[in-house]
Each structure stands twice: as C-alpha cells, then as structure tokens.
View 1 (cartoon, each protein chain N blue to C red):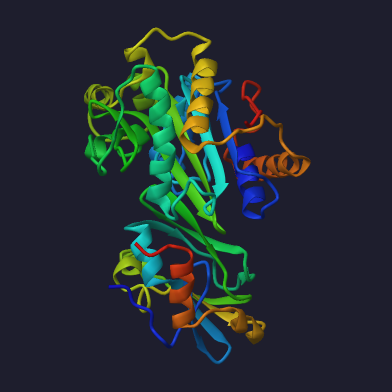
View 2: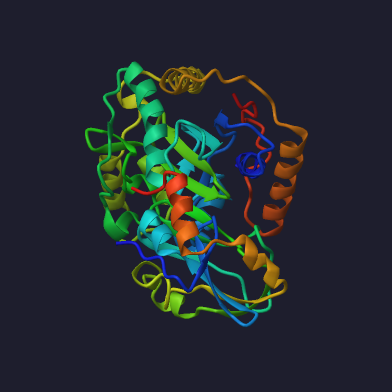
Length: 263
Length: 132
C-alpha cells in the first residue's frame, strides 16, 4: 500500500500515468482506514497471536482483513475522461468495471443504493459490515469493499474483492461490542465471496485480476500497458515505508507476495 | 442553495480565505462540504506549525473518502478551531463561518493574488463541470 501511496503522489504531480494495480498479500494483514483508531478498533494482541500484520491505508473507510482477497488500486487524475468529479461518481465508474468482471464470472452483483448499517456498534470497525453507495452487493451481501483518498485533483481508490471470507478471523482481530458468536453470525450474514459461487484455488486471484483488466479495457476503452514502478515511485514508496515504520504502523511495504506490476 | 460570500477569497482546491491584515482564516467552501457530504473526521496542524501554499496541511474524511486540505497561502498557524473537536458537524452546517479550520499568519500577501473572488470561483467550478 506504500506503493499505491507513492504512485498517488506521482500522479498528483503529473509525473506518473493513470495506474491500476492488483495484488495479494504474503501474510494475512488488517488494513485500517486513515482516520481509524488503531488500538480502539484492532485487537493488536490477537493480531500478534494469529500472525496478522497491521497497515494503515492513506484511504478512508473501515478495517479490512486481507489474505483471502484480491486488492485493487485505481490511481488517476479526476480529469481523465472516465471520471466525473467527486467521490461517489468515481466509485460508480470503478464499480461498473468491477461488476462487469464479476458478472462475467456468473456473480449477479448489484450496486448498493445507500449506506446500510448491518451490525451497528457490534461491527463498527469492519469495512464489510456496511456498504456505501455504489459498492458491490450480491443479494444485499457485500462482496467488495472500497475506499478513496483525494488530493490535488487526483484520487486513489483501494478495494478488496473477497475470494474467500473467514468471519470468525475478522471478528477475532477487529474490536466490537457484544458476544463474539453474535458478531460472527451478523458479519457472515452481511458478506459473501467468490467461493460462495464457484470453487476457488491458488490461481483464482490471478485469473480474477485478468478478468478485471479485461473489464477495465472493455468498460473504459483503454489499452493499459504493463509496467513496473518508475524510479521515483520506487524511491518514494521506500521512503513512505520507512516513515510509517518509524511511526509504529507497518506500511505493508515490501511484501514478498505482493505483485508489484501495475498494468 | 450554495453560498459564495463576496468578502472571501477562494482557492481552486475548494478552500475559502478570510483576510484581516496579515491573518488568513481558512475553511472549506460551502460548495465543497456539499459535495463531500457528512464530514466524519478531520486532522489539522498544530499552532506554530508552518503551512506552505499548494501543500497539504490536513485531511477531512466524509463518506469513505479522505480528502487532503491544500494550503491556499504560506505562513504559521496561529489558531486552530477547537470547536471542531466537539462538533465536527459545523463544517457542514456553517462552512463559511463557525466551521473555519485554521488561522494562518501569512508570510507573503502577494499569494492572495493567485486566489479567486466569488465570481471567479463560481466560474471555476462551472468550467470544471463540478456543478450538479
């Protein structure tokens, strides 16, 4: 995620092109939103016990337990032709691409109409407890959570598409009120994942990323070119990583299993 | 109905500036708060911090988007609106007055020349196609 932030800074300053990245996680990790209270919303003892890293995103929103998901980042200036200005129109433009890919996989996704709390304070820390407008739902259950950061006419949208989902593990690492069993039941009832629709295996993230790339091409009429990081992006990502290490929050960089190749 | 008071300067990053002597009071515009929706959280600099024109000085979060606040002028922060800690809703309900964010002792009053007046700001958001 430090790489995403570095590319975001470079796109803001018009030194990097619009970028789409897909990646997985070498270790299970919780990412928390920019403004979330780390100790108030994440059970750090449980994370340590379960071998779960914690990273802070530059984007907003609530906590996500990564590991059985495909994470995406879309980074662009808002004057690109696919985007109307504003947070929600950008959600919609990206959700159109994501939904196209998921429908190609036979998953009947719809857009959330409005924020719908599904667990109140019981699940307050979890991104997947509450869909925001234009996030993707299947039969009212969330399959993808997304969040944005915006600055200087550019945006970074992060999202997590669930390939598999372990409600118990999410509840173990995220704080909430009430009985654990009830929280697990409520979270499981509000979330779905690819595995609910078809068998998944170790190749699923790669196949899904290819479908998503195809959907972005088809929806926006773009021809993305595979490329590694620029020298500036790499140096900036390393600096952001060092700074966040110094602040006591792991930045998620570098992660050995992370696919560094933007398309 | 969006408000564009005539006695304010406006930045292209959707902040307003009220100038008294070399002091600049800064907040987000009514137009910006309407676009953002309900603001949930804010991060501002401390008194005596320096802010630099065109560089971030804070963040606001609304509806799952974190938006950086880009300084319209350079200077030292001399006041921070502590009322926001008690009621962040005033950013939405009274963006141009009690929802102010910081006061900066400006280092270079010429920077004001690069800001927009009320008419210029309305033209700017029309040009950007940003009016609903």
